[in-house]
Length: 166
Ligand SMILES: Cc1cc2nc3c(=O)[nH]c(=O)nc-3n(C[C@H](O)[C@H](O)[C@H](O)COP(=O)(O)O)c2cc1C
Image 1 (spheres, rainbow, N blue to C red):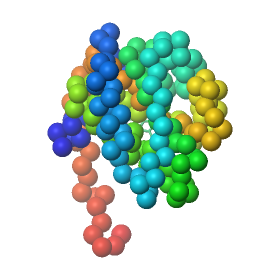
Image 2: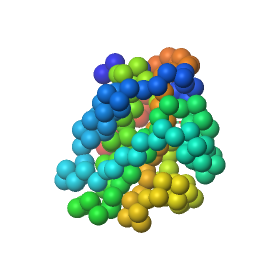
Image 3: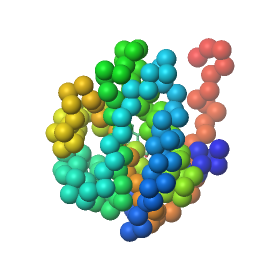
Image 4: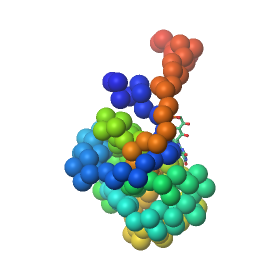
């Protein structure tokens, strides 16, 4: 729970690289997410190449931190793996959030970059990553050891809670 309460978006990173075992843990966390009917429609693209990171910053207006990132994980859905139509967005969002929480656990900084449903970002990313037609990128997670500190956000708001009816 500590990881959930302390996680913040980190957009500045040190030059320390992320170990393969940590990368595997991030992906194990992702694939532990719940999905509709356990359909697990996700696929993950690991990006370590600086040139590809830089190409992404040209098609995604809020992704400049990728220039400093040690790793990016693109969370995609393979629509051929869907058994319950339309739920892939929720499945892949759950996988994305699990990566953020595991990153916090490992002492890594991360930020979720939204891709879907912005058509231009989806098309641009499909082209850069050579994705098949049936594969749709939902998010990019930018990762690295933090070079900035942020305190926990306290967004708890009792007014957002409704008991039994609105
Ligand atoms: C669906 C989604 C899309 C987001 N897209 C971006 C993005 O493109 N660029 C970015 O810097 N942050 C992005 N964020 C991070 C949010 O800005 C951040 O989570 C929010 O401001 C709350 O701050 P916190 O994560 O530090 O608690 C995105 C977050 C979500 C959930």
